[in-house]
Length: 121
Image (cartoon, rainbow, N blue to C red; front, side):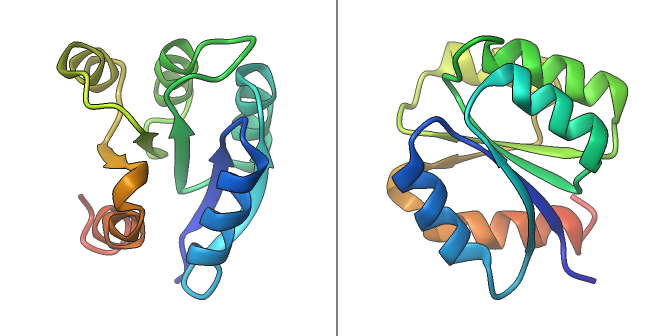
């Protein structure tokens, strides 16, 4: 079964690139560019995985992560970030994030999704 993925990033070029990267192995069920839209889409679409930019406008990504994993604990949240802030990483883990992937190592994203969805991570 192909993982159902929701992409949350406010940079259209990132969304396009990630969509292309994942298209062969995942079903992209939606894309959103702010935290409010993310919460609504997560409730409506119930994806297997959310690829979450660390800084979304409107509802902050950390609060969105906390709410999503509270409402639907089976949804895996992968924080997709350009920074390596250990304090932020710890906060996201405490909020329910399953993994972190660097935007500079985007090739790791697909293997992380497969590991979480297929291996049950």
